Length: 188
Image (cartoon, rainbow, N blue to C red; front, side, top):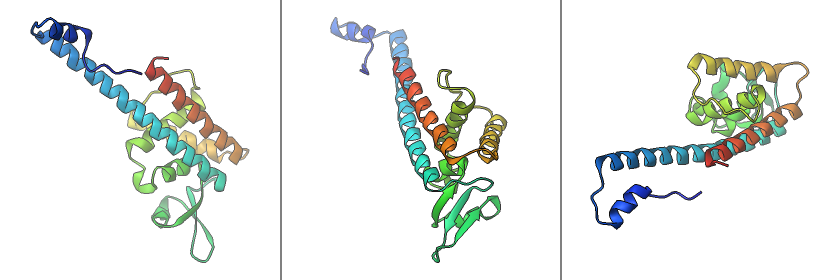
């Protein structure tokens, strides 16, 4: 995609030696702001795809239900981690995770849980599960809705009939959704 730094109106004014009007300057600022937003969103989608790819590796190495993480200590013992003892994940070797835990771990661990990257990766994953690839992703749901989406993902992960392969397939579907969003932003 080619990004012009100036609009045709501004280029024309410069070419013929005419001063650029306030309206043209304002229009140009709006256009450049929109272009910057689009570029930032494209970069974010690239990062989200990276987090999802790493989450696939985490789930493939060891998937969990009913806990967030599994860590292996220096003696080779595996310990399950939930909300009450999540602090043990820092510096530990994560040997497994649930769907949400895998995304959090792939983005840098529990200290990154509330970052925009983690939140939007979870938004996109929920969207891939419940909305499908063709509908545009709702990027900034209200906090209560976002929390409900995380609960939906957790419940889905913890269903008795769920398998690690199904979780990996959902993560692949989220990658495809990110790709479709990227193409949508690029105007394809």
